[in-house]
Amino acid sequence: MQDTIAAISTPFGEGAIAVIRLSGPQAIAIADGVFRSKRRVCELTPRVQQFGVIADASGVLDEVLLTVFRAPASYTGEEMVEIACHGGILVTRRLLGLLLERGAHSAAPGEFTQRAFLNGKMDLTQAEAVMDLIRAQTDLGLRAATEQLEGRLGGRIREIRDGLLDLLAHVEAHIDFPEEDIDPDTGAALLARLESVWERIGLLLRTADQGRVLREGVRTVIYGAPNVGKSSLLNRLLGYERAIVSEIPGTTRDSIEEVVNLRGIPVRLVDTAGVRDSECAIEREGIARTLQHLERADLVLHVVDASQPRVEENEPGHLLVLNKTDLGEHPSWAGCEGVRISCLEATHTLGIEPLAEAIFERAMGCGMTSGDFAVAINARHQACLKTAEQHAQAARQALMEGLSAEFIALELRSALDAVGDVVGRVETEDLIGKIFSTFCLGK
Ligand SMILES: Nc1nc2c(ncn2[C@@H]2O[C@H](COP(=O)(O)OP(=O)(O)O)[C@@H](O)[C@H]2O)c(=O)[nH]1
Ligand SMILES: [Mg+2]
Image (tube, rainbow, N blue to C red; front, side):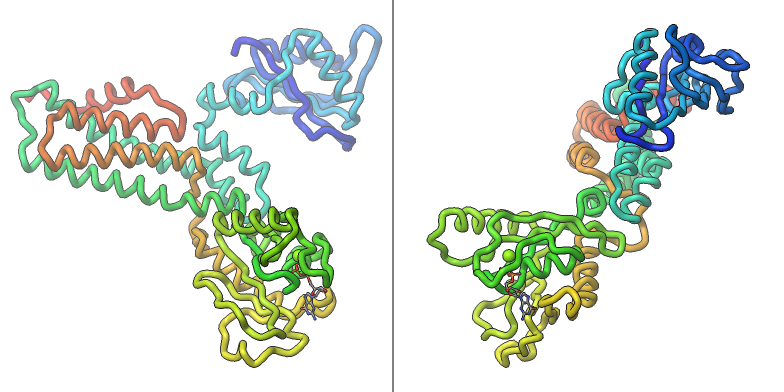
């Protein structure tokens, strides 16, 4: 962490401006060596832009606006310089090249944010939220990322951690003073507190589905017999002709995946090969893939040709979509629950809005709860919290069975470590010391 890193922070390509960032102990000295202006870089007021030029021995490279951030009041917590230059591919490369020549190192992906984490500017959940925010595909995903960046999830985790620390302090008191057994009253009180912590872990764990949906989308598989209009439906939902549509059954072989934004929820649509017995090896492989997708689906749209007699039963849980209603509905479908649509032509699409509504409602059922997006954990948080839950459960069991304080403390410590991993491991010893110091043990 002693070196100074530099990178072009804006996307590769042409633009009005680009930003080059420098972070580390030499940031200001390196910038000072290449910046010509009325004031030296080391004299600039932090966070106020200064106009000037970047020059090397051969002359001026570009006119820029330069901003200085003084440690620790910067994104990384280190000395930082941001140079806003013209957004040309060559000019940005040459400026970066000059900074590297003067002693900066090329930053690794995420290294600025990694330094921010290591310098205590943010916890791990906030660092992850930076990436979620950049990658958000919908308004709701963006909102969840912003809330996480603001530290909502970190806050919940710290509450749980504090609860565990408090318990651990009590339990360890009994290890240090073995003559004082955990009496039944204290035991019951500890159990109640442990259960409340355990419940809070469970509450967070239940947001995992919502988190996955917000980050990756609801996996929605368009499934059915050949030629019922699955690919046509994909195209209608996307709003453009993505998949090949033809009257020849078995046209779609490979699965086609696209994401649509349905009222703020990303829906990952998968158009699949129609399922039938086939002689063709390629089509059979396509059908095998369809079945794999079905297994992992959050939601299945079972498409049928409603102009034809009903032959198959709809599986419970699948959303039945009766297509080709423009051809008239066969009487065998009478009274059948499902969304009736037609996707013959983009301009004559019927029932797509009600279908979108139905998909949205099912998607909400896949873990989306309309109101509260304060927290939605990701897969890594889920793994840590599951471990924490198991250890908390073991501690609970041990407490109920009256096992030794040492054993309970061991489990609590493991739970604490796992919870700590969510936000980045903490110095538990220090925190425990702090908590102990507020206790009155010498009675
Ligand atoms: N009349 C009518 N034809 C449709 C409709 N949807 C699709 N088709 C036609 O049905 C055929 C098969 O469509 P396609 O989307 O390729 O079906 P897939 O095999 O299930 O993917 C094509 O000729 C489409 O133009 C519809 O709503 N009404
Ligand atoms: Mg198809």
